[in-house]
Length: 459
Image (cartoon, rainbow, N blue to C red; front, side, top):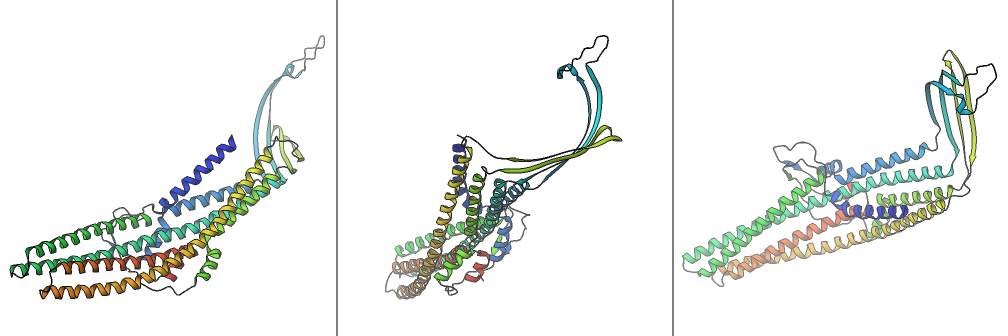
């Protein structure tokens, strides 16, 4: 029953961890007070702040400290233990209770001894000279500690990824907002021109209404995009731990640059060698292997020594040294299947760690290949979107000229404006997807702090 409860607790903990991990890296511990003036924030500054205040990283640091404490606890089982004690004892005995009830005719033999007192100052030492189980448990704790340290490094990569993604999202929001603002100005100019033409008798009232509807639609899009821009800035503040209410402006943009620094094959090799979470998984497998050996080691003999030395007597100036030394060996003869159960459970945990590591290897391969696919596709989309935007702008220019010349009504102009807006949005989305794919590749390779600077220069 205890094993089942432990398994259920582990299952619930694993599920909860998987569900909460993402939200942890989207949160932070705000520090400091908000400054009255907006701050200029670079991507480098944002990453530095995130690495100091992000909740996911702080939780990983706490887990690493817990693993360090577990290692010290396991080490203590292998080291000698020393204690000291000083005591003053006052005692009175009823000799009858220990079977001393001697009776001699004519002699009064008291049966109460005391009260008497003595002082005992003593040092105690013990040492497990050989304990295979304790040695393997210590080796497991060492590997678990290393796994926790590597998990902290992996958490840093996740913080960098979350911060860079949020930063790039705001850049994309700002670009969309500027594009829509340009569309508002264009729609405003069309409305005013159409109104002038109506007053001059060269345009119908329906054209004025149509251009006015287009203007209101663009204004609504601008309001919605401004709201999304402000919300995404708040999301970045949460990731990097800005003080509540702190205003800031991005001081960098993300230009487009094709990826030429490495091939997919090079990236696959580098990812396995560099990923901290993969190295952490390997350490967890080694820890589980030591746990199996520790469980089996419970059947092996153990040897230890205990000793004590001290002075005991009625007073410190009337005492004599006494000591005890014991060397012992112990072997397990029968335990009712407890050790066999521990071995089965340790083997099951080892199998789970091995399966998780194998899955992580496949996940890393998938992440690298997916990132390259996204980068290549986004690069192609950027080229197509740029050409489409150029064509849409040419179409808009011609539509305006035709409307001004009275060849057509403003439906053609409005449709051309919508095409330009759509082409602009497609280009912005493609640029954002390309840079976001580079961030994903930096995460997939490991060492995201340096990888982002290498893969994507943000200016």
